[in-house]
Length: 125
Image 1 (tube, rainbow, N blue to C red):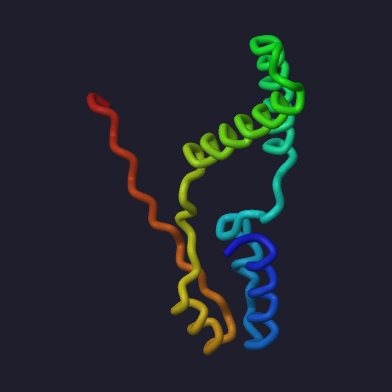
Image 2: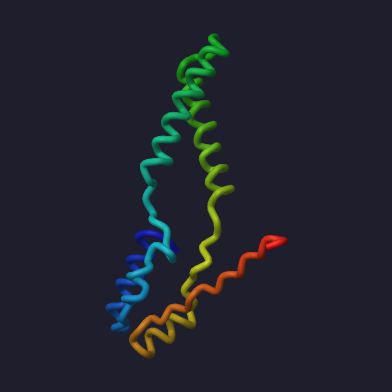
């Protein structure tokens, strides 16, 4: 669950069960990604589309301009998704059903801290 869906769910959860969600509200971005597209990926797609379109129109001058635009858009969009898939790391923070049940019973959502694996020491240090 992300973005607006998460907001709507927790607003209703808070209202229906009178649960204090202050811990979650303080660390919201660690649990849920925004739903909207940020300006950076949108601009990247636009710039890549124009660059690929110009390159195609010069390399393949017999292609119609519309085809160059479409291919440019598809290539840049696929490149953006491939980059996002390579870079995006799974979010280690999650809220379990058990935590929601406990919150509904006691009136406060208690979030467990994330236990991170210790980094390996550098050999020779």
